[in-house]
Image 1 (cartoon, one colour):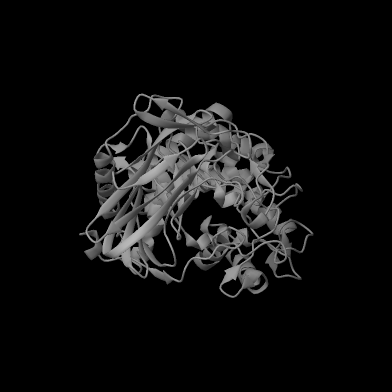
Image 2 (image 1 turned 90 degrees about the vertical axis):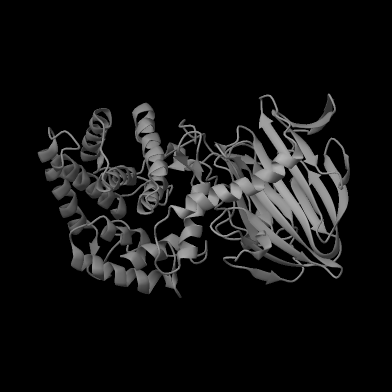
Length: 540
């Protein structure tokens, strides 16, 4: 039945070729269950999966270490071609393998149940014969976590259990799969003919009792997960141009909502380079205030109220516990400092790290992000509670006191400066605080003070950050550099529209590369264009 369903997009490839053991990043599809994300390569190899959480150490990590990393491969023997797509309005991934002898379909899911996310991690892979016969090879290699873990297996009852430090799990499969298990992993093979199917799965957990579900139940949950994704997508009311791409973007954002806490991860991976061979490789498996704000805005736009409320509540609780930080762990703790691991890096791009340098920085932009998010939440017809209102009023006071200081800026740079965008973010915070107070959502005790500081910030920006020679706001006073983030000032409703219009023209002219844009001046040699900047400029 699934084969008859319309597909959203598909690409036909020749036999997938790896470069130095690595696939192009565009050749991965993502699977998710609300707690973790796996990346499945077009050649049938799952090269990234952290168990049980996005931020956990990886069980499979060939994505960042082709020579020593772990993976889970199901691949036709001999040459083959590939077509792949997501099932309509779903995050269940389907891959069609064509060989000389036949055709087979691989359907993959990080499974959920009728009641939502499963308590355990369940990676399911179903292979169905469509034409002729296809012989598949199977190989699982568990991550050694850059030689900080030594996987092993044990016999518990009638099951062979694998262990990678505190993660334990089972490799389960239907009867047609022939395999051998060792401490390092699994090797095997199987054949599917037209009308036949085999199912292979990994069930795993961390420091908890392990459920052993029947393989038939795992198989059925692939379809249950597909229906659950479709049901979620069906609530998206947008019916305008490019609905398929619009829904696909929403489904991608849904991957990053960490359901146990409501946090929004910036990304599901670490250390993928901004330029191949470069050193700008960061761990983004944390929740940034800025990214949370932008994603909450997107959830509100599609009327995904549960996701928006969960994420906003998570943010407010973190502010209560730890104050305004640039980022937090998905559980709401402070992020650890950067530590380099021994992995070789995607296409030898080092370093490969855990933690993030933003953890110890201060960025004025967080004030704008906090109040921008609160404003959007209220604009959607919602209400602040008294404790949250009092918390936000104190943060507005803090912003009013601190805006004159230097900071690390939106791009988390090591050199602190009076970044123009940071000042505009403080202006945004106080402008929204005043509006929230006028709506009765915040206490009005300091409302007049917020107005005065808001206006002082605007005057300071126009006096110090405008360049007559560049006819643009510059990155910081006297720098002469341009910053694409300044396009966001239009979204923030900064008041000097004439100068913003001239700044936008300068950004497009000097930071543009075709339809795309660099983040700021002189970046062409260090990194590629930053797609978000092009969207910001187009929106502005």
